[in-house]
Length: 379
Image: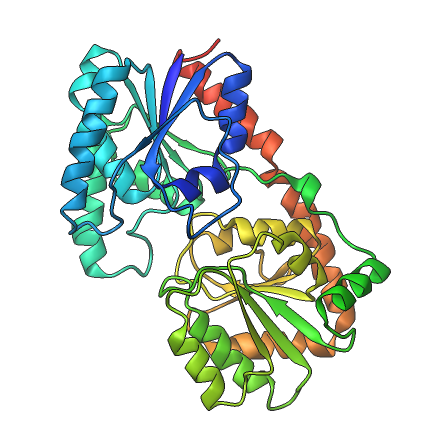
């Protein structure tokens, strides 16, 4: 079996899909990939297991003419390489791929699309529903298997009558939980010393690239409220800093520069998560956020916005708290509650650890393998 994995950028494949690509290779498959190379932004991702790589000039913007070029390049790749299946990811990558593969489906090409979070969701703009919903519904009829990774997307695709051959739910892309295990108090203290933090600091972490979707400003406003009462609080913000300027200026204007660390793109998130007291998320919407699954596997309690993806992982009051989107006051109150109740941190964190097991990579790989078998792609 020969399959082409497609995503808008290389890092998406490198961060999320290498375990399944390696599984397919173990089963004797040839696995190629097509994407725009963004290695300069996100370094250190090992994609060496991929057999052949094709550069495709995708743009994440639906208005960019680059996607017309990407369509032509991708169609030629598909026509020349006799694939049994193409497995597409990311919104624009999936749109372009399904259009390019449309005629080849008549010759037996199977088209698989993993939706990592539809652009239309509860709370999304009318524009998103008008444009992206109709595009996805139209293209669903050119999709042999639509895989959703959260319950809201799965329910929506089923209820709205998407015409994909199969509509399935798989809980994310799988996290290697062996890399994320709870630390003893001594181990946490050692990590904090290594990174220059005190055991007296109350540390929160939100690993996410700076952008409107990740909504870091909500966290900063919550932190402003918290520090009026507690000064020894730190917020770690690892992630690409392309759109960081507004957040950095807010910190300077409100005396938070000593409380917030803008850390840039990091490859040591497992250590940073492990030294934190609490993991937080201010996201406007998610697919199924790996950063929270990793935090849960370390035994961290979660305080997150009550939006799609986050609320798949966080059971309010059990392994953390859900707060309304952009309600910085509610976020601050939950943070203060945990600062004042250390035993609650342990209680919620223990529940996080239990819940994390269902998102492990081994379980997800078995489900993905079964899907490929059901499509007669592997035996």
